[in-house]
Length: 438
Image 1: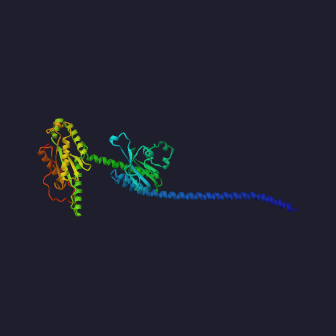
Image 2: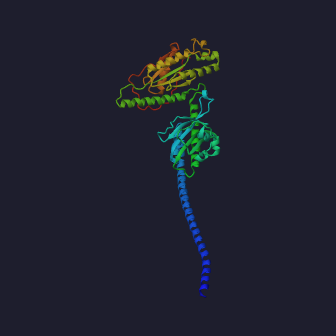
Image 3: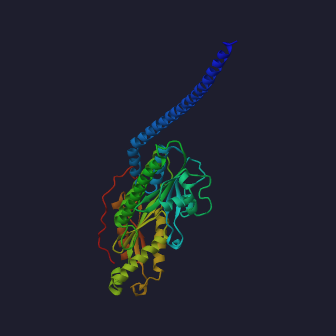
């Protein structure tokens, strides 16, 4: 009994010492398990982050490899109408969006100059989208308008920020059903030329905003270059005084139309079609007694007359007809898909319209009116190429002058049974320089 009590007391002391130790060990084991779980979670997160970074790096590397080709595609489309479709194709290849729209800025006509410009849908994907090409939306409303004004590439987070919500002007939904994840303005020299809006892209090339910004910048440069080229080409093809086509453009246009008409005729005959071939006629005319008009009223009045006459003819012809100044007081009207009889009727309609128009000082002219004389020729009966057709019309114009002026004469010496060639070589510019009475 005497030995049991010390044993029990020793056991209790030992237990008192061991129990806290065991509890501390259990707590340490729990903490170790938690740290292991946390480490495992962190490792899994790092693995996922690493995989995502690898994927984004591969996507970005692929985008950078493709971008020179994408830029080439953009700058190979030389017309303004081709650029939006090319931009859309580049966006689809680069980011693979479920929905994409390219809009371009369009100014209002002079009579609507007080109204703000608008954005017009110029290209859209996928096919069958409810947003039809040609749809106009205000440029100063909604998310698209905000991005156009801010001239910054924006994602959904940017558009949902407090700053954006306070600056977005309310208005009807611009493009129903489109909730863009990214909007990129096409900005060149601080001017917004258009917008790219995409939804649900599969690829973001590491940074969707950066990739779309690069596409938008290149697209804006291509769009500006195409517009500048178009303006330069139009300027080179327009007569500086009358603002109708000049002689160079008229000769080129006539050459191209002769070629097309010849090819159409050849194709039809090759397939046994003996029906009538589409006609092509020209009306070459000039102002009667124009030297008298200039000498009597001054050269400034003569210039204004040329301008008003060109404007009057331009307003009276068909959309497909091509009209231009051919030199001095001489003008040329090209009439596609028009027979000789039809072109004579058109020519006389133009002549009558001009003779009845109250041009300034018209009553001082020798005939009492401002009149024109002209010749009409039809391809291929009066000429097989540009030079031959113009010479035939010029000879008929000379006959109209000799016949008393203020009249239209058809070209003579038709080549009966002439077959137009399949593909005529483009002839050199014709020189119509024969002296004729004014």
